[in-house]
Image 1: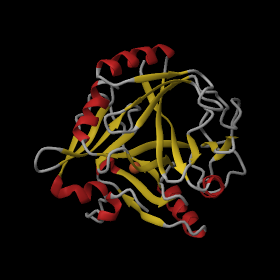
Image 2: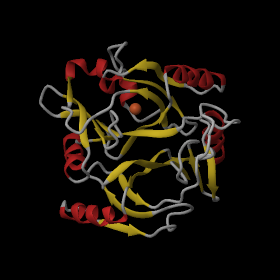
Image 3: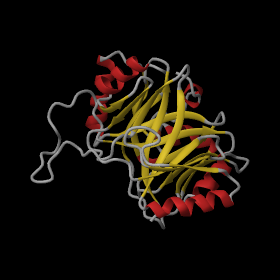
Image 4: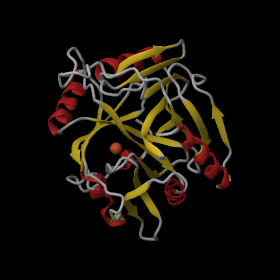
Length: 303
Ligand code: FE
């Protein structure tokens, strides 16, 4: 019952063809639908129709972050709770948001981001048979992460959005970076028992920091850096270790300026796990454990 995991992210890109080439050939996602101004993509091991939507727009950034719910009734329950928190909601029927789309509950979170809760997206399968499957289909190109992993968003009041995700959407806090004055500078929240499905950091309201795709191990992360370098994709940071979440990550930018990450590692988070706290003085180590400092450039939206 409730939110299962991150479903998909819709990103703005000013040049849809260029972004399509990057996401299919460098990241190695699979195109599942296309209209003149939008493109739907999935990672190879995902069963559902899409985990990334690219939307033609004059600027870059995020339009929608969507989470998958287990039951259709979850949408009714969350609709009541979100309304009780004083936030307007909108119901959108299956198929109305484009190819493959499920029943959707849409609202604007206190961080300024548009959030969708989705049930019943079309299932298209992962290209592997259910009987005696090989570990991976042949012919995949680029990084080809098996699945989307998390999003990292920015907003002015991290305390408020964290409380909203915990109290209204039933997320669990795994880690936080707390300022000397007691305010949360960054928080990591999960529904999947992973280290995080979504994270927030102090910054401009409604801003996008990155979308993280899962890779299976450190060697795949290193190979992702090779692939970025080969294609001339500018690497922002890594491959490196995070203090917070204990994961390993590599950051780079899509042609529009949206930050991407490939991520692996982290830990299993039982629901009764106590949150880890990083102090303001150790914020650099929380984000980049080896370097111990975080460049101010990394704390901005821009490429
Ligand atoms: Fe990340």
